[in-house]
Image 1: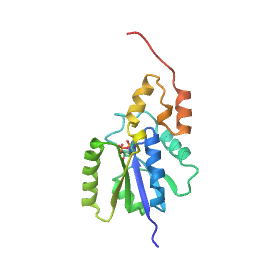
Image 2: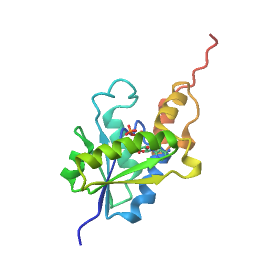
Image 3: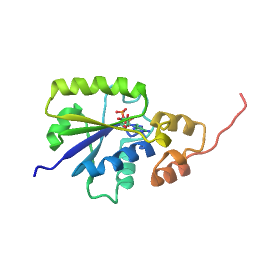
Image 4: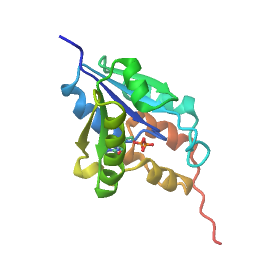
Length: 169
Ligand code: ADP
């Protein structure tokens, strides 16, 4: 039987417990999940906090114990990369109506461009619904405690690298 391969694309800047939970919950549905950093030249420099190498390392550490999960990166259209890797499914997570609006537009465009590739959505768990990479970056900028939002290995590295700064302005 043909392998069911899903691609989970994202910036993962950084990977959060929300991402981790989507991938782990999707695992029984597929034979293989490729978690891949999409290098988006339009987004670059605007909101990236962590280097490509760092983000890749955190992905590898987070999913190190899972044979069915592969870590990759790409800088082309997501559907082109999906086709290249043999993935017939694109996995995405949904937290709220804003995600739905954004994701449904992308899914429709991808469907138009490449009807043989299906986008599959998983709803976030209630406890992960508030987590986003941008929230983590914002809290981190001011030295807040973000450990509860991150996979263990990521939390340890980030916390070590952060200093608490609180000045009166
Ligand atoms: P992008 O730059 O493509 O938005 P992200 O790394 O922010 O990439 O997110 C990748 C995918 O993970 C998206 O489908 C996003 O909706 C989903 N996601 C992000 N945070 C969560 C969360 N807390 N719960 C569920 N899904 C999430």
